[in-house]
Amino acid sequence: MTEVLTQLFIGGAWVDAADGATMPVDDPATGEILCHVSDAGPKDARLAEEAAVQAQAEWARTAPRARSEILRRAHEIILERTDELAHLMTSEMGKPLAEARGEVAYAAEFFRWFSEEAVRIDGGHGLLPDGRNRMLLSRRPVGPCLLITPWNFPLAMGTRKIGPAIAAGCTMVLKPAPQTPLSSLALAGILKEAGLPDGVLNVVTTSRAGEVCEPLLRGGRIRKLSFTGSTAVGRLLLAQCADAVVRTSMELGGNAPFIVFDDADLDVAVDGAMVAKMRNMGEACTAANRFFVQRSVADEFARRLAQRMGALVVGPGTRDGVDVGPLIDAAGRAKVQELVTDAVERGARVLVGGRTPEGPGNFYPPTVLAGVDPGSRLMDTEIFGPVAAILTFDDEEEVLRRANDTPWGLVGYVFTQGLDRGLRVSEGLEVGMVGLNTGLVSNPAAPFGGVKQSGLGREGGRVGIDEFLEYQYVAVPVR
Image (cartoon, rainbow, N blue to C red; front, side, top):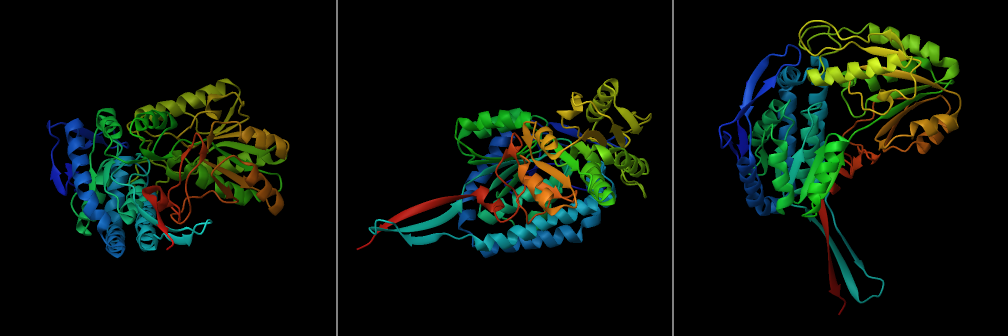
């Protein structure tokens, strides 16, 4: 495993937790402890907040080009260190090295994208309708931010939040997921090397999220929260933000429908299903959760998908030829098995997989279930595992109704060779993103986010930086 500093990063310095506490980082492929990192408490959180607050004014005055160049240098360093960052990520998270290398490239691209956006922050000037005042509009950083990232994409979720914050001129406290702190710590080191001033980014690794985050959100000095994680935790954080009216952007859970019509190219649909379902072992908020296949092609689609899923090689992500690594922890694997068992008890047929293997590590086989009862628990639960649950439908109106029958609305997938149908169904889906004949929607140049209980705001794209900027309007009388 790549060596990485395991302390907290506060005010540009690597420091131990104030109470000396540490927490283990496990290898999900073996269950063994990789290392221990500092486990921050409330005092450490206050120190990180203070560092961010103290650095805010000067950082906000920094020239946009200077902020841009820091991000550009960090982008280049990340790419230069692709292999070591990929090995680090695989060690703590489990994904195969090929996927980890892909995430490194994806993560770096957020820094390049927002390095270009940093120099395009603009304002406006105009005459108000009454003719008595000119209007000057300027944009300025919202202020110190708390960024909370998940474990499933430990490098990319960091850069997707840090990139626009740096570009906008905001300082930050980053709290990564306790399962995968090493990628975030490595990222802090890279940004320091790239020239990021002390105090702009502070990283607190902790197993005590409530004790660390709640005082910051209620305290009034953190002015922005950007969170990626479950809807349940998102609701809790929104309540904590209310006291100080903290601005929020949230990328929450998903329950993505994957719709295959009878006129779809089934080869294209199965290829899309493999990406939408198996990216990151299914541990993604964008993962296809509910496969709705038109009745006349359902059996053939299920057969082809089961054949492809069954051919995947399961094993440690560092081993050559492995397609599917372990799930993040034993609890995540147990949840997947419980959902599969419930579906089978309700009549689903297991076409491939479906049973927890013996031996060490949190492995679960790629699984395809056909004839799934709509009342099965996995229909209204984010699976976060390599399980494709197939249901049938008869017509467009029916499938739209069933696809939208969920409190979530992050992404949907539609496969059809009819352009009118594809656009009509895409527009009818209550989601923030649609993959039309593709299983991959994530791109730094596109606005990522959902509707309903899948979140607030957007990350990436031209609008991603808006989440970290405020408008100021100045009225100037016309003399």
